[in-house]
Image (cartoon, rainbow, N blue to C red; front, side, top):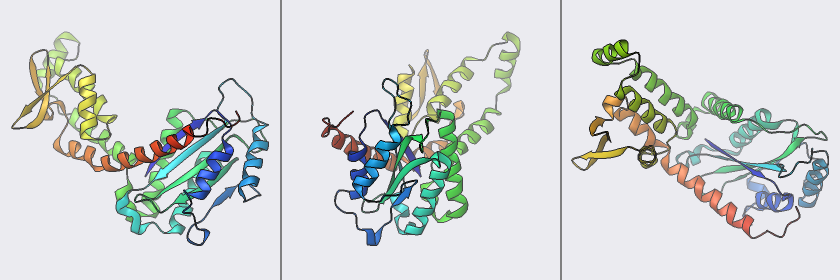
Length: 289
């Protein structure tokens, strides 16, 4: 699964709630579900009213976050396995980990090629000034925990594994880093400094861990100041200070490169969803702050 989070700093309760509930007019309660967590009214006006009332308890800060919008997306290859019961269970798990004491409106959008769920979280807990904000480290852990839960309870959704693959990439790197040549070891022992190859390898691994596709990896390499070199029409490594380094010698194996391609199509699908959502937001600039 892919979990994306966006922050709203304006009081767009009605716009976002309507967007989630209507699903562009395709929503049919007979073939879907809606979760009204800590909400006692289920109509659009009632939901908006409750979010507005709860917002009165929020500590007011300049440019403060008013609500969070999260999208949980699955691979289109797993669409046939995504029963409503499965989606609802996973949604409740994210609420439990992300903000069980906040207001939350949830609805799956099942008509897209890649099924996804929208979560509208209040920025503060129910009738409390306590905020819902999470640091990057905590949010990364929630993503990992959610994916582990999916892996344990719904192994048939194997095509939707993303963040555990990142952990796998780390493990592959740790194993390969142990394979340092004797020549490099002697240089490091004599000078007390890492060899040029080790420095380049570490920078390349940083690019690799943050990449979502092969093209994204190559782009990050260029931004880091390296050049790419090709052999037989295939990018084989990098050029650095006149030296050629093959990816394999820098501990980036063919298997690791293959991992980059596994989730690239789904990243693009989610970008399209986020773009459509942004285009919709641009049309409601007149909403109250």
